[in-house]
Length: 80
Image 1 (tube, rainbow, N blue to C red):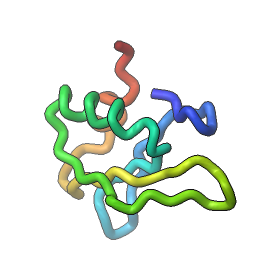
Image 2: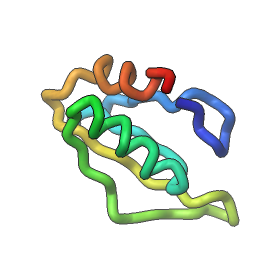
Image 3: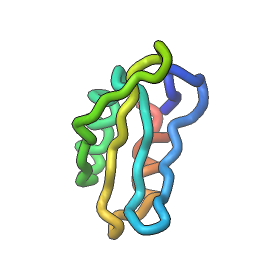
């Protein structure tokens, strides 16, 4: 899946002490949630939506540290 703001691929990141997460445009949250739900991957959407210096609003989707980041990335990369 492509980040509509940057034109780059959405990439699953891994926190040093936490589980995987994705930073993404707020406008893409519903599409990403649909893919994650289809793949049966549990997640939590941060309720905070931010916009810095007029840039599009962004948020973060978090996952348990026990969820395989490669599985999440595969769900995002899956072509429709």
